[in-house]
Length: 485
Image (cartoon, rainbow, N blue to C red):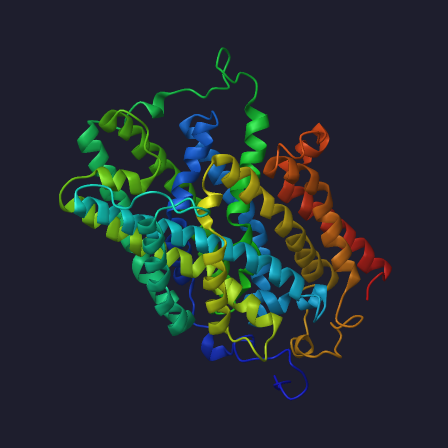
């Protein structure tokens, strides 16, 4: 294709379509990428939230597996465009939202990723903090800093882990792919070692596996399974909803369409379900070993003795770096670059992501299960679901998978609509988000919004599904009727 760089400011080399020589990722690269991203602390602790909510161990595992099987569908559908045309998510969004309007979904995705980047960085800093405490023989730090809620040692460890990740921002996408490819087998091996360790120490896999759910007849939450299942399923889908949007940032490097489909299918649902099972089994054994369920792998590592503590925490540190960079840096780096292509490169976008992650104080998000699941995970799925609905309808039903790549980089092209904005996409996005706002306000600020109706609360439990469905229908109808521009 002819570079349109002399025509407008929608082009830079980071956002340019990948050429044939750049499309080197095979299916096993994608599988390794997903294994590397799945094996992370937040994913490990997801099962904890479900068991704490009343599910049995295996109900929690199956819920996690089902959610990932569902979210795989939009990943494969949206990823098709990346593999076919070599374009990132922020550029693909121009076909539906317009060359200027695409900044809206790019910004939505980028802000959520900054939050996740901060959360993973907090986990990494917590591991350094724990390791230093073990080496010191006693917890380090002191009183919490006013306004922050953490002590000075925790803050410094958080900043130290944040600084470690800057190396990969400087060295770009290829360094991240290599890190994921090399660490994925290590993570699988460590999982088996951990299973052997708990089985040997506990003399079995513990009591949690035999414990029934709290929803059975006579249980403390009898008959309440479905009111817990649906918001939990939505939250689990929300966990990867960000990647479901910006998956073209990775599939644009695919050698073939088959490579991205097979790699993602092999790499996401099954490993995620297995990780949930691992979490349940290991945590069940901790009841025998320590007298209580330890869902936090960092807490578990800190209780190990001898060299096992050091090895476990180093592995967790490597794991957190690889996951954070792949899942939470690549996407927003491209998204910020798309906001001002002439001034923001991929690397500069990475610096912005890391900077915003600092000011979002991620430890606040993780203070309670309510904050983490019903405010954070379900809340942002309400924002990202409508975008996914618009992208899929546009690419498959409106465009029939046929795009003019050069036109995506022109202000006066076919994707400019009216002044760069496609109002059909904007309307679909707004209408997809609106029904979920009352439920979100009640979940995030219950004391300020106590009187939200039960209907809105119910809608919010299906936030991602509601957003996808409404936006898809509205966008399809408006585009068919010619209501755009």
